[in-house]
Amino acid sequence: MKKERTARLLLCALFFIFLLSGCIQPNETNEVIIGAILPLSGNLSYSGQAAQVGLDVAAEDVNTYLANKGVKVRLVIEDDENNPVVALAKIKKLKEMGARFVIGPDASAGVEAVKPYADENGIILISHASTAPSLSIPYDNVFRLLPDDTHQAEAVANLMLDDGVKAIVPMWRGDVWGDDLYEATKIRFEGLGGIVLDGVRYSPQTDFSNELVLLSM
View 1 (tube, rainbow, N blue to C red):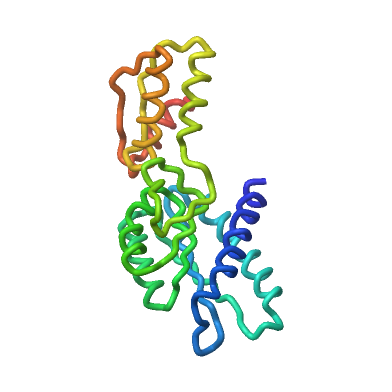
View 2 (cartoon, rainbow, N blue to C red; view 1 turned 90 degrees about the horizontal axis):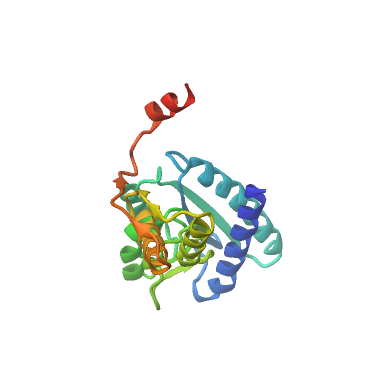
């Protein structure tokens, strides 16, 4: 189900890019190069691999549609390892290849890292998974296919209070996605009368394997 949903989102994204591609010219081989930055390895590899499947389906469908139009889409997928530094290097590589449209990055931290470069170089980013509220910036080059986490924070805070939770000790991922979701949930929960105690902000590279082993015993 997740792969099917991802495929639909990315198919919509690729058709959207095709509709916009009238503003760019194909290269000398009549190709429109579409880049993608996905976490094919690292701790979000499950998401990146699902997105890769969706993009392969989307590219095939788009090129079937374009079969008699003298132009085709060439999809170039780069692995950012769910690492913002790598994501920035990958978007620079894609620009050198001629990509003006890039799908991704998957994570909000990756979008945050590449956004200034995309804005400065006229690259359109279409992220299918980024949801950090602070990245909802008017008139930039980022288009996101999902709503941001504002409503998720409201729903989580309401659910906790409905379940009788009066106080929480938060533990959240220390990047733009985790920080934004934590802050939005804190504001909502406290606004409804709940108490948010000091919590733990952990590094995205934290390895919980030892703790998981202990929990399983």
